Length: 98
Image (cartoon, rainbow, N blue to C red):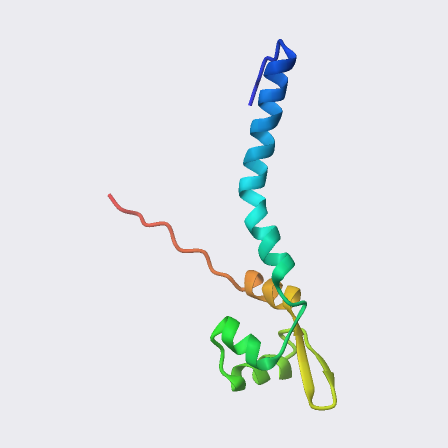
């Protein structure tokens, strides 16, 4: 984007518009991230992803998802789970309509 700014008012308007766009894009993500828990239990992971208990165990056993375990208590880092889901996301094929 090329912008020729000749006055302070124009500069302020351009800056305000850029900040507004950035906030509209990023604020919902930042609020969601601030409200979430840093660690998930197996039940919370199942609710979040729709996975069964067995799928969670399989992914742990195969070391595909990160987790922390002390005794019988297993916790999953929220950031690690989101990263796993993002890495395994498949984008839809573009249709060759004509």
